[in-house]
Image: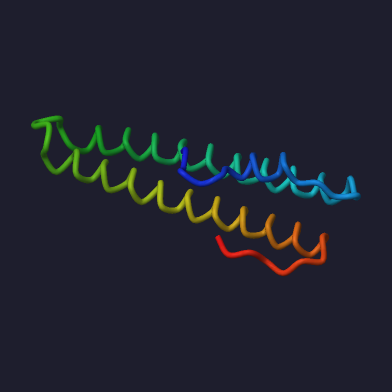
Length: 105
């Protein structure tokens, strides 16, 4: 799910350090976040399928659509928070490796 901020993958790609192990660790973090995003999308699809079975599609703006919209919004917020955490971890790691203090996002 795209966000306006720099993505976790973008941050890890631009990471430069003298240690391949650190880069491998950051790549592993990115892959984990991407797997979480995929898992969240699969969960929301299963949820929508369940709602579609439970509520008939009566109107465009009925309770069924409101439940689905709320689920998408919740999922987006969870994924965004997870992505921001990963970006913050990458920033702290980069700054620690460079001997700098963390910058504000």
